[in-house]
Length: 473
Image (cartoon, rainbow, N blue to C red; front, top):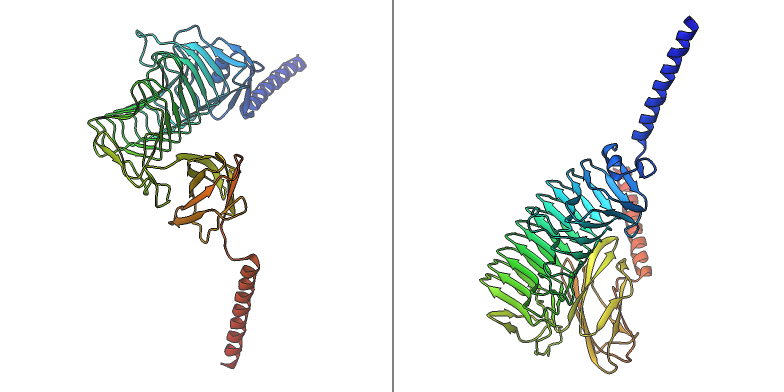
């Protein structure tokens, strides 16, 4: 009898140890797999702990999900890992901070993702389509991603199409970044980006495209302060490409604002202290519209915007028009003579923007630099005069410029402690690429070595002299 009791106790103890071991292993493992470990995404979230990764395999998941833990939910790929609703409600509600959501195709709902009073979240690498608008539903209805009182979050490298209202809607949300997204606004009330009562956000490097279907506009900002709209390609949105309403201290720079046929490329209504520079205004029925816009600035560091309607000349050869571009009651006093082209580069390991203003088609030969040289390819009509005005993100001295290994017609440069401006005037020798090389000419290597050796010899002699003097004393 006693042996049997010992046996039963031993079995119970081993079972307890085994259970504890399995739980411990599950908690120590950083990755949960769906459907291997759990059948549904929600089950995986319910059993996860903060900091874990939930990897979701390819398949169709008919779920409505609440992410209430600080986890990373990763789909296998956005073409084959599908979260699909039934045309209503919110597919994914994020109610915890420090959440990452990536690699999914989300479709067929009133809202794809809703983030509520959270921070430090990231939505990246997703495809979001077929989001429906219901006028009787909540305020997020028809939005692909809706932020409500959120901060310090990122929406990056997502694709949006067939969104019936707003693709990304920020409300009372500050210090967020919308970057490298592709927005296709192809329905009547569709608008890629809308900010309301939201401040100090950055909207950059996005493609914001309308179609032949009438949409509601490209980027809209209302009742907000301190936002930056930069380096976006904003094209063919009906009504307006960018609309600012009752918003102050906005910076609009380095954008392509093109082919807006109904109203304006840029519309300013009851704005204060808006700064607009380095933008390309091309093919718009109206480039800029105003309604009580105060203290608008059109230049920065002596450079304004490119206007395809500008007819001035550049006799002093600096890439800037000699006379202002006048429109309505405004003046761009430093209109650009060529389009502005920003390029993302790594400069000595740091992400920077290297910009080129040119009347030719230009692109960089490399996107990684270590302060040695910049190589640019330029294409234009054979025999045409061309120019490049470069803004290099570093102070460079003693610059030498070559065009096809020869001398340009003229070149000059200016610099301050943050960047260097280089102007090059040349003729297209052929219709093919022209390569412009701009090296920084420092001291030759042998001379640098000689100086170092000389300095070491002087230091050594000084040290010996001091020892001799100390012995004498």
